[in-house]
Each structure stands twice: as C-alpha cells, then as structure tokens.
Image 1 (tube, rainbow, N blue to C red):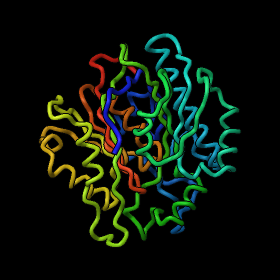
Image 2: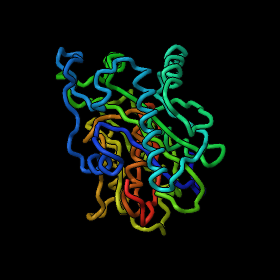
Image 3: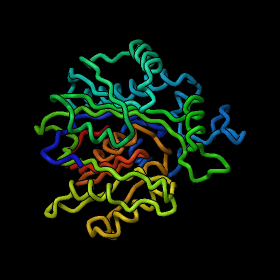
Length: 331
C-alpha cells in the first residue's frame, strides 16, 4: 500500500462530463445522481439495440477513438484555464501529467492521440507526460508529481464504436443479457496542483492505494473490502474532522456493491446517518480512467472534508481525503 505525507493543494479545476453547464452545474448534477445517459441515435450495441450511454452532447457523432480522447482532454484543460482566469486573472504555465486508459499503451493508438492533440490549443502547458491506467491511478499520481505547480489530467471514453467493441470482447457490454454491467460513459478532468498557499479550491492532505483482486476461482464469494478498507484507514486519521460527504465510483455491478457494503459496515465514520454518500456513475455512467480525477474535482465544489473512493477491475483500490476551501470563487 502507498500513501501518507502532506498532500498538494488544488488551485483550479476543469471538467467535461455528460452533464451540461460549467463546473458548478456539472458537479450539482453528478452529485444529485439523476441519470444523464440516453440511447445514442445511431450506435448499436451487441444486442442490436441503440446503445445506452453517457456521452458529451457536443461530441456525440465523433466516432474516432483517439480524436475523441484528445478532445476530452483539451476541453477539461480549457475549463481549468477558464477557472484560473475567473479566480486569479491569469493562467499558470506548468507541465501536465495526463492519465489515459490502458489501451493507449498501443503505439498506433498513442500516435493517433498525439497527432489529434497537437492540433488543439494547449497553451499554458509547458510539457506533457502520458500515464496509462485505470481510475485508481488518478489518485496514485497525486504522489508522483515531480514538482509543483503541475497539471494532473485524465480523459477516457467508453462510448465510441471501438470502445464498445472492446467492452463486448471483455464481457462488459451493457445489453439485455447483461443489464448490471455499467453504463458506458466518457469524461475529462484537469486539476492545477500547487503548494499549500492560498487561494486554493481544496487541499488533498492524504491519498492511498492498496490492492485486492477479484476472486476468479470463486466469483460467488465476491470481495471482502480489504484493499479499499486499507486505503480508507490510511487516509482517515482517528482525530480527523468529521466527513461531510463520500464520493464512490461504485456502479450496479455486484462486486462493487459488496465492497462498499463491507467497508461501511465496520467503520463508524462512514456509517453516520447524516453522512451523505454519492455515486456519480448513477448519473453519468462509468467514466473509465477519468473517474478518479472527476470525483476529486466534484469534492472540491463542496465545503468540508470529503472522502473519494475508487476501485479498478485489475485490483487497485484508492482513497483520498479532500478538504475544500471555505470560500471559493463561483465556477
């Protein structure tokens, strides 16, 4: 397990999700949890039906997978740039660490993504380093930035024909035969990480990553919450202030529901009747590799201390504590 140590501050943020509006409007919609997904007018799923998905309306008809990823990353960064202008009147020049889905390790897809991104305006980014992984990696990367200030961003789309075919092969397609598979979605998030000096949107005092793989030999047993529980225990100090909110990436899948139930059952801090739990995937669907940083961004828009919980299919479990500023400029 990794974690511990004083964390960075979040000076600005940007979001692009299926929810409409600016940062505040998107956050309100995703935290509220009302479904935003719908059937795509043309794209057909494995059962011959128009696919239910959470797509960004402006990108609806862009079928090219690398191009769509580049546009999501650019829109998230541009929203972060606008947030900086609104809050301080200037854009901070800094390098960017960009998390992309594991399939972008493929040299051909990666080259296509780079070509598409080079045609977009990323002025303000001095250098780009790519990372690849599932959603928990977004929280793990908080501890791996070489210097501050730094942009930490993520983008993923599960709604292009390429992504739909890939999920069908993996057994993750959502159709009439598999109604509990997560709704595919897409999103991008970009955080400007700085030191602890104000003005900040939030601090991230603690983040941790642990492991617990699914029991493939005994799938009926499910998960025991050990990995996620260890990550939670690493970030929640006994004397910490009470939580104001928990954000979980759990979807309708059985293993995620079991995991959340186990980690809640033995922790009084997570079981208080007045503590609200929110599941953004209920509103937009599964945002893949972007889900972790999207949840961090959402936590920045609510006062108090929030806990973000993220789990990956390959075994990684991550938790982060976010302490939002008392006063924040409107987004």
